[in-house]
Length: 277
Ligand code: SAM
Image 1 (cartoon, rainbow, N blue to C red):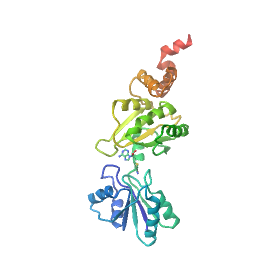
Image 2 (cartoon, helix red, strand yellow):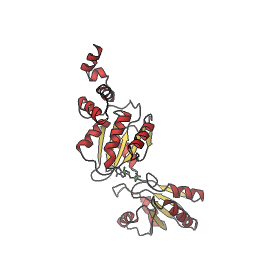
Image 3 (cartoon, helix red, strand yellow):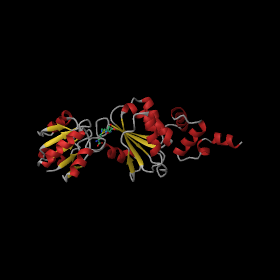
Image 4 (tube, rainbow, N blue to C red):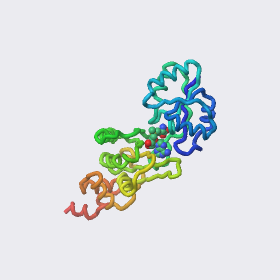
């Protein structure tokens, strides 16, 4: 008996491993976040196994029940709707309950949106911090971003499309105009990467309604080794920093210049000249 944590695709059905398919065929039971959703995946691969629900609302009770079945000798696979169980998805409780009972826990690695996004973001992959979904309420979200603002590691977030603009505006206000990337609809037909400074990403979503599944990647603090990635003119960036992040003109110019690796004088020679007089 063993508890298998089976990663499934995050969009493209080809992204399932041979090992995952074998394990799903061999176990006695598959515990799924949404049985109907997983049934479609199983049908696609011709797997006919009993399923049971295991989601955030029944996690504790179901974990106890599944551990009893494991102790009775059954093998059980946990799958979530997409990607790796336990990553912003249920699995943690059953994993800890199984470990307490000395039940073998076997991870079957595969797709995970945060790593898929990070590797193609163009931002540093040496060290990163996955922060999950930012809090929904503005004050809590801003407090969380404040807490992360000194992190040197690249920051990775999951975010819903209807909240991404607000989150980008808060990040711009708290982190400054750092480099960032949006990874949208990964592995799917409309996969898209939008790379640029935070102000450019805000401007992007002013012009295009955010849709689909989104991972947000933001450069860490003091990540000066990267080439500046900017879209649009510096004047546009300054205007956005003033309107979206509420910066004064002077601070907006400083931020925009810094994000492009320029001194204020090089970025805005007339302003620097005026200040000297
Ligand atoms: N367990 C999953 C994993 O391993 O990545 C994450 C589940 S979490 C409930 C769902 C969030 O992951 C989405 O809101 C989105 O932020 C991100 N996500 C999942 N699939 C994605 C995809 N194909 N493209 C971009 N982001 C994705």
